[in-house]
Image: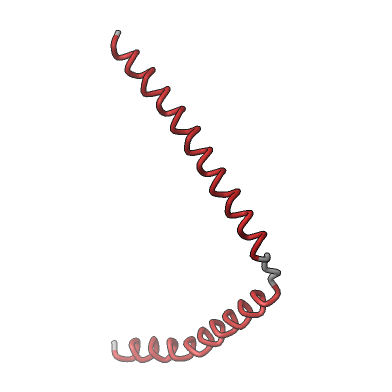
Length: 80
Protein backbone atom coordinates (compact mmCIF):
# COMPACT_ATOMS: atom_id res chain seq x y z
CA UNK A 1 0.00 0.00 0.00
CA UNK A 2 2.81 2.39 0.81
CA UNK A 3 4.26 2.06 -2.68
CA UNK A 4 0.96 3.03 -4.28
CA UNK A 5 0.77 6.18 -2.21
CA UNK A 6 4.36 7.05 -3.11
CA UNK A 7 3.78 6.52 -6.82
CA UNK A 8 0.66 8.68 -6.73
CA UNK A 9 2.57 11.40 -4.92
CA UNK A 10 5.36 11.32 -7.49
CA UNK A 11 2.89 11.46 -10.35
CA UNK A 12 1.20 14.45 -8.75
CA UNK A 13 4.57 16.15 -8.34
CA UNK A 14 5.36 15.59 -12.02
CA UNK A 15 1.99 16.95 -13.17
CA UNK A 16 2.05 19.97 -10.90
CA UNK A 17 4.73 22.01 -12.74
CA UNK A 18 3.09 21.44 -16.12
CA UNK A 19 -0.29 22.49 -14.74
CA UNK A 20 1.27 25.58 -13.22
CA UNK A 21 3.02 26.39 -16.48
CA UNK A 22 -0.25 25.92 -18.34
CA UNK A 23 -2.02 28.27 -15.93
CA UNK A 24 0.71 30.89 -16.34
CA UNK A 25 0.42 30.59 -20.13
CA UNK A 26 -3.36 31.02 -19.89
CA UNK A 27 -2.94 34.21 -17.84
CA UNK A 28 -0.36 35.56 -20.30
CA UNK A 29 -2.57 34.79 -23.29
CA UNK A 30 -5.58 36.38 -21.62
CA UNK A 31 -3.64 39.57 -20.86
CA UNK A 32 -2.44 39.77 -24.46
CA UNK A 33 -5.97 39.30 -25.83
CA UNK A 34 -7.36 41.99 -23.48
CA UNK A 35 -4.75 44.42 -24.81
CA UNK A 36 -6.05 43.82 -28.37
CA UNK A 37 -9.64 44.75 -27.49
CA UNK A 38 -10.91 48.03 -28.89
CA UNK A 39 -12.88 49.54 -26.05
CA UNK A 40 -15.77 51.93 -26.83
CA UNK A 41 -15.50 55.57 -25.82
CA UNK A 42 -17.47 57.02 -22.91
CA UNK A 43 -20.30 58.44 -25.06
CA UNK A 44 -20.90 55.14 -26.87
CA UNK A 45 -20.93 53.27 -23.57
CA UNK A 46 -23.43 55.74 -22.10
CA UNK A 47 -25.71 55.53 -25.15
CA UNK A 48 -25.67 51.74 -25.23
CA UNK A 49 -26.34 51.60 -21.49
CA UNK A 50 -29.39 53.83 -21.95
CA UNK A 51 -30.63 51.57 -24.77
CA UNK A 52 -30.24 48.47 -22.60
CA UNK A 53 -32.05 50.07 -19.65
CA UNK A 54 -34.87 51.32 -21.90
CA UNK A 55 -35.31 47.92 -23.55
CA UNK A 56 -35.33 46.20 -20.16
CA UNK A 57 -38.02 48.60 -18.89
CA UNK A 58 -40.14 48.18 -22.04
CA UNK A 59 -39.89 44.40 -21.97
CA UNK A 60 -40.59 44.35 -18.23
CA UNK A 61 -43.74 46.42 -18.74
CA UNK A 62 -44.81 44.25 -21.67
CA UNK A 63 -44.33 41.01 -19.77
CA UNK A 64 -46.01 42.49 -16.71
CA UNK A 65 -49.01 43.46 -18.84
CA UNK A 66 -49.23 40.01 -20.38
CA UNK A 67 -49.02 38.46 -16.93
CA UNK A 68 -51.82 40.73 -15.66
CA UNK A 69 -54.01 39.68 -18.60
CA UNK A 70 -53.41 36.00 -17.89
CA UNK A 71 -54.17 36.49 -14.19
CA UNK A 72 -57.50 38.13 -15.05
CA UNK A 73 -58.31 35.37 -17.53
CA UNK A 74 -57.48 32.74 -14.93
CA UNK A 75 -59.73 34.45 -12.37
CA UNK A 76 -62.54 34.65 -14.95
CA UNK A 77 -62.18 30.94 -15.74
CA UNK A 78 -62.22 30.01 -12.04
CA UNK A 79 -65.40 32.08 -11.54
CA UNK A 80 -67.39 29.70 -13.76
